[in-house]
Length: 175
Image 1 (cartoon, rainbow, N blue to C red):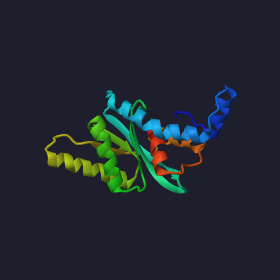
Image 2: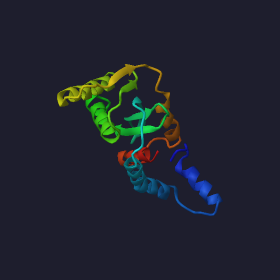
Image 3: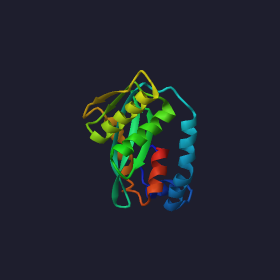
Image 4: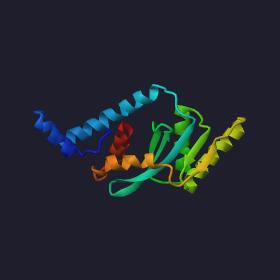
């Protein structure tokens, strides 16, 4: 799932090696097994940097653009990702909750100039205040520091979009 290859191309490559699979079969394998792989990877807690870079990009699902939220640490390791039909405050807040539940609170989040992402992080900080936490998550908005987030677009570009939201989520989880 790391390489920008489309399923028909993968089918041809496997055919050259004597394995005959249909590209639709490869797609079904991704949809079936990548959520399990992603769950296994998430269950293996690893130390993440306390400085996150958060951003996202649009990908095409059923001819419609949907937003992919994504966070990486300083080293470029993926912290979490979430596919959302909307890019708004509620979706950003849901993404932050999901990422924080899995990886703990970051000290700093570096993000683009999106107002929705900023509002989502402000909501998370308000929840921290209400819960009695003394430290809050710092927010740095820098427009061009999130180039590692967009690298996923290069991988999915050859696929020419997804036909189903569920298959897009499964593929992104596998990546």
